[in-house]
Length: 118
Length: 395
Image 1 (cartoon, one colour):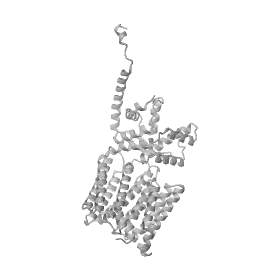
Image 2 (tube, rainbow over the protein chains, first blue to last red):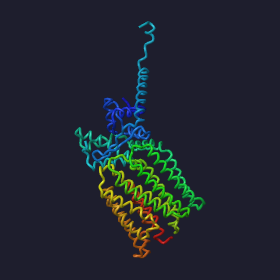
Image 3 (cartoon, chains in turn red, purple):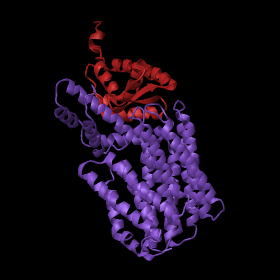
Image 4 (cartoon, one colour):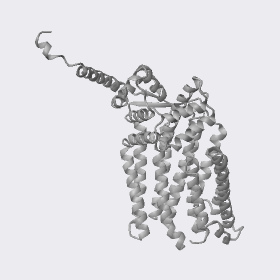
């Protein structure tokens, strides 16, 4: 599946959702979690993940703390109160949208047979 | 996990820098991500070289550079007010320099306008940073350093306008900056969440851009006075501002090293405090005579340069770095001995000439990739341009 084109518009919500469920996560952890939950169907590239993380941090939806792990700096992200609220809204919006999409993508009923009461 | 050696970490960091990822916070984060990916492959039994090749092959060309560009764009959209003040200061600085070269009236006023725009950019950026990051500690330290920088700018404005009190303002600025920087080197500790290094790291690309544009402007402005043999007041003040800004940034880069060491050693903190005091003392022109200031430069710069060279360069580049530091020391030593009348002043012609200036610029270009060393060399070249007419008795 070519997931990258679908991911672009939903990545923000995915990150907010993951952080709402986990107290704090770092970049690699987020990408691994997405891969695990999607049964390896969705693989986040570096290029997709980091600009979105910085954007969310800039918008005040995430806060970051750095810790030194194995001699390198690791940045842990968590949601701000504003981020927690937005996560709920965005997840609910995406769920509604997926339902709508599902209805659109369902096979169209066969009109001619319907007419005959089948 | 955690099986990568220091050399392997450095090789990955160098790769990221070569690919165009120079913004330190993002580079740190990408370094951790790439290391985690490599460690996963190592855990499955692959050797480091094979794992490294697999990871780098997966990264499309130019992707790393694109990540940085996209991330910077995202961040720049936010701090619009400070960004616009910074643009205004560039414009006024450029226009003021052109007016000065063309001998049009109003150049001085434009430079003062540029200082005011810099001050407003700093105030708005810091205020935004403090409001948006209330959970981060040490906001008072940011305020203290900001006050020091504003006093510094005010002292030059007073000097351009020939108002009394410029020296007093400069003294207050130097005291405020020496104190606040020294406190920062002891107060900031390891992994804790401090505002000052966080904001500085975030603004580092913009600060460096500003310093290099300032340097380019002052270099052009300085050329007529060097070639035609006269001293130019405005370019002298701009050089002092370039040196001071680059020096403050050079020392602030040390805050970032605190993140990767749990507890900086006492010697490291003391060394940095002595270093910033040695660096700022020569700014007190009214209190220190030229031989004392020249002596400080001779004693301080080779030590600072050697430490930076050892920490940032390897192999042949380290040898070249030490050769450059040797040349810089020789120039400082000769000028100090000549200004103390130990050696004849005519000897200065050997150290202050176009060829040496070109060599120093070439060294700056060669070592442009390391943030510490390029800032160190930019200060050296700016100081050289500052001393040039003085040493040749042109003023």
